[in-house]
Image (cartoon, rainbow, N blue to C red; front, top):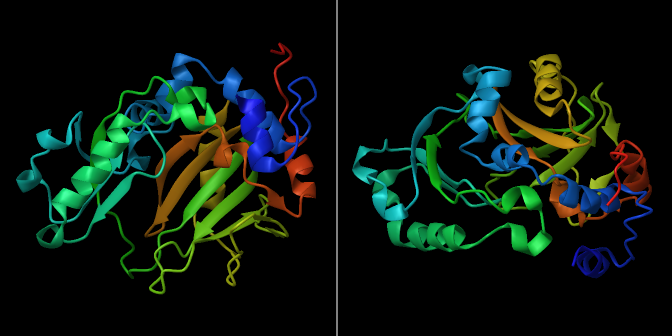
Length: 274
């Protein structure tokens, strides 16, 4: 399946006995990252325990509740602002800024569709196969100056952060696509981008607590050939986002294409081949 999937998405063949590029090795890792621990690490509820044990619960966004059914959520008890997420997939997030204007029927349809979907089947990402579908509510977080909350996503290789994937302008008033940029660990901007996404016009020069974020990413990614560790920086404080084994499913090209091989060289696959 993965050979066909990769061919359709990337327009090139996949040889599991000769994986060289980042996107090719991600396909290999989909088959390797199949343990119960990997499943717990991508579960947006269960991973909180791992984060608490490894770096402390002060880096966790406060949890309001967890449910296995939308109908079990007592919305009257929720604050006026909150965030809903499903625990088992990617991208099912609902932000409520004003409960009096919350479209419950629309959100219910969205959440219920997600709960019925096993995220594993599309891209065959094994960590998601056995995640228990649930809903969590987290505290609505914002910067005091109402500036955009950006994602700091660290590409870690064998426990060493090497590349920062920075997501910004996600909530711009013009509804333009988010901007994605790559940096090295000295915050030098890398001349690369993901296909379909533009770089931001505004470059990072100094990031509060950046060295601490790198140390936290190192701690959380230790023991894995490749893991993406995501953080938010809110009012200068670090908050954990999520852990991702297979960035973009390994099927979004890098521009220029040479970066696929450069990043691929950073992944040292285990010796036991499939």
